[in-house]
Amino acid sequence: MKITRIQIITNTISALPAAALILRLTQGNLSANPIQAMTILTGRTAVYLLLISLFCTPLFNILNMSMFIQIRKTTGLFAFYYSLFHFLIFSVLDYQLNFAWILPEIKQKPFLQIGFGALILLGALAITSIQSIKKSLGKWWARIHRLVYVLASLIMIHISLASKGDIIDPIILISVFLFAMVWRIPLLQNIHLQRQPKWARDLNTFLSQ
Ligand code: HEM
Image (cartoon, rainbow, N blue to C red; front, top):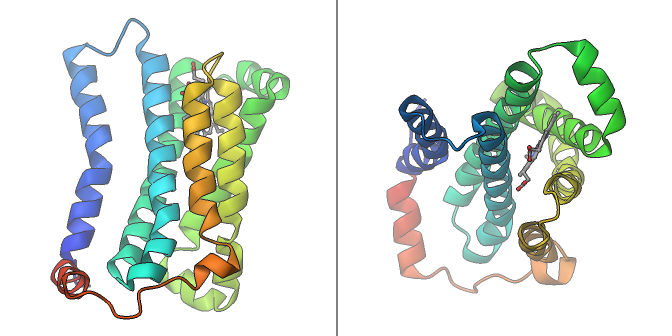
């Protein structure tokens, strides 16, 4: 399988926050509460990547640049990896995989139940992105992948409830999410450039090689 330039760039950029996290961890400069810092950093990175992946479809529609489909897949997959990492930090590092602590905590806090639901949906979308599974699903693949709107909404609720008292960050993230959603309105979905500009064609060709 051929690896394209845009795949190398997107994979590298998506992996950078994990590399920065490991570096800060080895240097011991991850705040006074490293577990909380890691939970927030992995959670936020997952959200940013998910939002980037949500903007890829409208950008593909408007500019007709196929590289956005590759960016969508890579950022979506990395959003899942970071969410899984986020969950593992919570359950393994914070709660030492002690289900006698984890289960009552999840039962008590709706924001954890909502996060769990979002993680399961993200996992389902990641697994169905495997080429052979995608092929065997046929038309169902696109239908299943519409769940991304449900899971992104769940994540917006999760972060609003998790970010104790801070309303600015959730408001910014929810606004960006809604802006990505607006482009799904059928009237706006038809907006695309009549003729693809030369720079867009050239850039797409260069990065897709
Ligand atoms: C079972 C699944 C999940 C669990 C157990 C979980 C757990 C947590 C916990 C305990 C916090 C609070 C951290 C703190 O302030 O001490 C948190 C915050 C956060 N979570 Fe999750 N989470 C889950 C799923 C997700 C998913 C799927 C995403 C995103 C894709 C996500 C994104 C975030 C973000 C961005 C924050 C930080 C909010 C802030 O800025 O303070 N979480 N999560």
